[in-house]
Length: 354
Image (cartoon, rainbow, N blue to C red):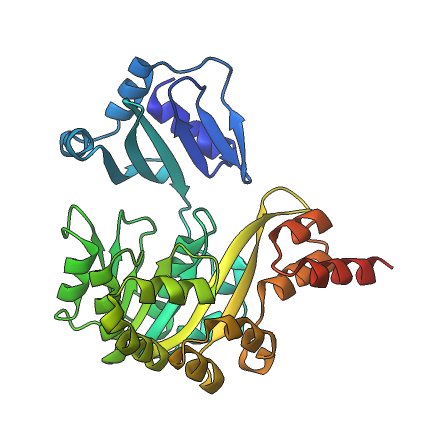
């Protein structure tokens, strides 16, 4: 098979990802699990040829000089894919992710009214967090679409690469891609402040300069929505603050306490009622108690505030998992595997089963 045939297999098998690895057959990720396409392992020349066929000369040159490259590719009548080509033990390998054609509504993803309400805010910082493959990019695209369809705003995205194609709606959107439209997240974010934005969507907060500029933008009248590769709210705040030198951490903690709107943490759990996965989430809203706790850097108390913050639209990951189990959407073992408090989850499972 050539690379385009392999990508067709992604679509026909309803897979999310394709892995091209030396010493293994091409592998698809279907509903969270890996499955092989045939039983013939790829050798070094085959993986190199497959990957070279889909990269431009510039992208292949970057792969050789920087040893890895992110890219996006659109294939007519098939769809869009996000790719990462890289060197492993001296070999060239790659991973591809299918980007769905349509952007789901926020509620269709499994999020509640609180996440939709974040889209109505006019300034502040919203974080969407989770591990790789937890659907953060889709949530970002759904939130951006909600904003563009309901508010006359100027919305700028900074992505690496561009995945979902957004439409203007009531507002206008400018999607900027690292490598083709700008050199870095930090440069693009600084420049965006001179582009008259109302909303800035950052695909990932990766480094000190990007985080600092994002917080400044959130403080100065912009709504900033961004992702981080962290599990929950306390770990996200720790990650942000630890990026800064010790002599700046008190100031940045105050800035976060003042600018944070909320944090959405999410995971995708295998479904029990059919193929696919279902979203479990944790939502923290920055109310007075949360702001005071952040200001005093007592992050260990945030989970307790989320537990008692239902009236403000908050819920824990454990409450979300228990709800999904009781609704028949996930198996009890998956609820136990992904929960934070196993005693709480065990009681929720046994009380429902009895």
